[in-house]
Length: 370
Image (cartoon, rainbow, N blue to C red; front, side):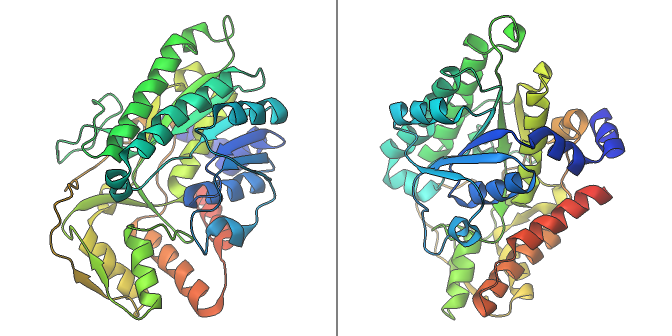
């Protein structure tokens, strides 16, 4: 058990997060997306004043409109530098979580220019907006585990391993990490904190996230439940590809814990961080589908013929740093994550119930028991 975990255990993680974010103005880019909507819900629960900046919800149905969180919601594109800067000027956020992105691998092959414009220059625009106001004290840029130069190693990638990316999406996330590090060194150096500036910048890399409310195209769980709704079998590609599966609330807890440290002015946390599941949750795609079927018998699948599009066969994260230094660790294993995710969709499709708040309360209770 690391020092961070001991300290958090003594004071209570949930209470410490509430104390950190209560009455803080927190700007979230990409709040209408899957991850952003869950994050908005959690910040609302913590008593923060969330302000969202994003495109319109990307799917119908969509999690954000089902939740209707209590927040300021602004429609805008992170590629629009002047509009973004005006939003910062008007709302004066204390903290920024940058989640907006073009996040689909297949789409990135079809639209590489849009992908790089959004994920690279969009990040530049967010960091420039943060520098344009005096209110911002902390920034977390959320990227992806796919930012690494993937060599199909059997061990996890550490934060100090090289950036890379085969497909446009992965490469754009590697670029986003590099430019975040550049801004941190060039303009927002922890060494110059207090003397030259008062902004701390970190980045966060997470594995494959699952959970209720995701209807994005070309993603395994959404494709699976949409097919089940139509009484059809889902076609899966790369059935033996191993991915680090985790419930969406797991990395969000890490982002909140990291943001809290930055808001406290802890310079040593202005760095890159991995948030991934335990080894037992690194599971092949076909096993994910079989496990989902155990939770909802309407789910069925067929293996699709191999495509020409490149996909990594193995990708793992080493999260020792987050465990030992930040005190974060995953609380829901693979089986619990699948149970919560498929249970969410099953209830939604069978009774119209949106159980996100209940899932969040269950997760927070797990934090208290840890």
